[in-house]
Image (cartoon, rainbow, N blue to C red; front, top):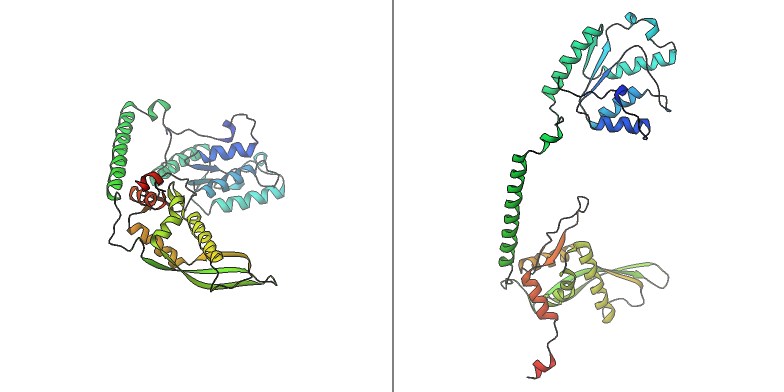
Length: 317
């Protein structure tokens, strides 16, 4: 049937322990067929037969499975059945487990061959799987050409996207509040009093948008994740409070300042609206769920104008 069986008797000898080898073969298989006879088979250290352990692993992986069980256990010759009552009991329990899924009963070798053929055809039709191809057919010359063409198109589109982004963010949008216009930032300040009890106080700080840009901008010259950016602003607020503690409780130790979610969201939205920042574009690992921010060309120019120091000679001229 143009299939490659991977039965236990075909496994090569290797340095890996037996179960590791078996798992690897199952993981690479498209279908799992289990044929039950009159014996439970060799068991693992846990007392479970390798066949049952294989079956459970295939089910766990979601591989389509089909079982083939004897139509009449009494017809199996005594020499081909378990003489141990405990093993016979485990075989009965395993057979019940297998019969909860798709199964066929077989009477003899010829009947089994016929049932396996029809069963496998059913699985292939109703549960299509990747299958295998010859190595020399996996990458044809036509496929290579198609991939090259697609890569070329992707490169062009990425270039266009970058150029479009640069032109769109080459100047800030001055229709939104910026520069010396002020915004109130709400925060929570925490610390410990003389008795080492936690103190928490809520307050407000006023900043101009230029001050916010000066505080955050340097961190976004290269792409930075939002949690780190937010911590930078928290440290900036704490420094402001410590430099001018009027209106805040004194005598605290272990201080920290945390901007409210609402104020932080407003800052990010405003800087985006001004076209000063944009989301990062570098590729990250799948596990990295953080949002990254970076300065736009307009944001970089704006920051330089804010932070750069003019030459004294030029200023004198």
